[in-house]
Structures are given as structure tokens and as C-alpha cells.
Length: 213
Image (cartoon, rainbow, N blue to C red; front, side, top):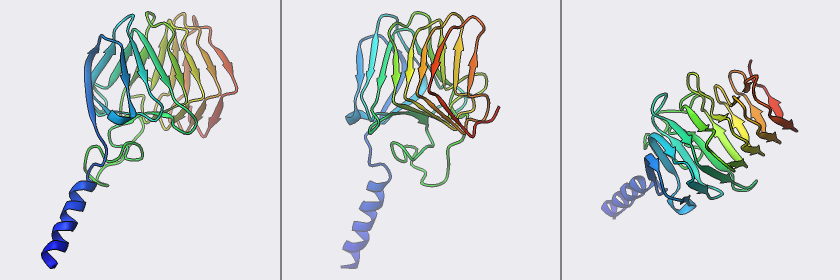
């Protein structure tokens, strides 16, 4: 009986290390792709790019973790990114040590914890068309001169998102004219939004909670 109990405990402990499916991604996405909850979380293990005229659709509830730390953790969007979550099932962009979403994907228990600026960011470029970022969580991004989300020469829609504990949260560069509405910026450790003088964003109903400038 003791042997059976110990064996059962061992099996439970091994099973509890990671109860989530994991999908590692890096390199170039050059075909229309959908990221699904069944393959979530997605671990971006190195720099990733989405080719021009290609669409990446992300389902509500998907978790994306950047595991490269301060380097090799950018996602460059030259095509169309459709990241449309819901209030009940937001899409999450966070760092690899964040066990709150997607579980303990680095399998170290409580040995590590997330911190602001531990991944670089998502860069939506001028060749991107029709990208929508809605009902997403951006957590712990903005390493170095990066923002968790950078919109450059683009009219991306950025609505109903929660930017939480990023170093730099959102940047609007060059001749961008994005719609920035109903977002929450909370405890971001530097300026939550930076804007280039050439940009022409439209802001409405955004909240700023305990951010530092």
C-alpha cells in the first residue's frame, strides 16, 4: 500500500509540472495561420516575424509567452495581426516566467517571477494592413528601447486592452494614425505612451492607473 501511495504521489507531481500543451514558435510566418487555444500557450523562443500580405489570427483565450528575456523576444508584424479576445477570454502577451497565465511553462515552480521589461515587444510596421488588437493583456514587456506594443506608420486599431507592469507600454511612431480607445494602462514603470510628432492617433476613454513617468 505504501508503494502504491508513493507512486501515485510521484505521478501526480510529474503531471503537475505542466498541465498545458505548449507550442514553440520562432522565425518567419509566411502562410495564413491561426493560433488556437488547444495549442496554447505559444512560446516565442526567438525573434518572430509575420510576412507582408499574410494574416495571423489569434483565438480568444490564447496565451503567448516570450521566453528570450531582454533579447530575441520581438514579434515584427509586416502583415495583418488579428488579436481579438473577449472580456471573458482575453489574449495574453507576457513573459516566460509569468505563471499566472498558461501555467508554469518553464517548470521551475516558484523559483522565478516575472518583472517589467523582460521581453521586448510587438512591432506593427508600415506594411501591416488592417491589424486589430482588442481585448488583449500586455504584461511585463518593453525591454530597453522597446515598447510592449509599437505602432509604426500604421492605422492599427488598439482597443479594450490592459497594459500591466510593462516598462514601456505603447509607442506610436512616424505617420501612424491608430485608434487608441478604452485601454487600461496600469503600473507601467516608465511613460505608458510615447508619440512621435508626425503621428496622428485618435484617443478616447483610456485609463492610467499608478503609472510612472
